[in-house]
Image (spheres, rainbow, N blue to C red):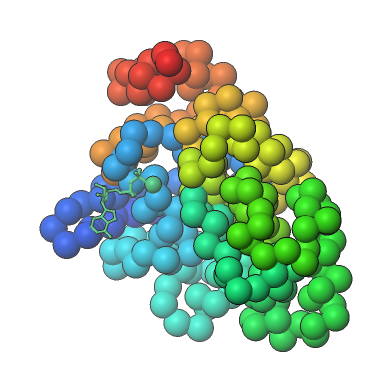
Length: 246
Ligand code: ADP
Ligand code: MG
């Protein structure tokens, strides 16, 4: 981990009159794994969607990724190529095979040749444990397998940062582990990861830093052992009490 790789300054986001992010300052180092936790509606998705400007944000806010300002215009494609995203709903193309889903972005954005993209796709599918499923269609896979394809698809652009928005929330319980295992492996590779999650065990084990959000603000952040064992803010304690108690 060296230097600040993502810098977020005074991040405000309004949806109409609703103030969803109320001035967030956050620096993330290259290779850092940050888990974002907090109640529903606290602004977790909005925060990570601002990082690649899937959501526009206020003019007096600033986000830089690798020194590049995240603003509309020519640089945005560069930022987005560096920032991969994995959503709760996998959003695979149903009419394309698993391999073709993973090949799509390199083919369209990078103009990678079909042969090279197929070789890369098979390598990535092996990495997420799906080497035997490349010729299937998404409907032939379980939810956990589909989410692993979505991770392979995000990796195909060789991103420096991966944003995960509750990647296991839509899965049946027995499939959560296989997706978290893939994410745990990725965390060891040095890619920068920001993970919105309700999986407190994962956050505790894998995160370098845990951020607790409430009401559009970062209420508390720190090492997992400090946040989970000795939170200083009452709101963090109440949240953890509620989610860890059942
Ligand atoms: P979280 O991911 O922590 O559940 P979100 O970032 O999705 O929270 O949402 C934060 C707040 O912003 C919520 O109150 C939500 O209702 C509101 N919000 C999110 N997206 C929109 C939208 N497109 N239009 C209006 N309000 C929104
Ligand atoms: Mg959300």
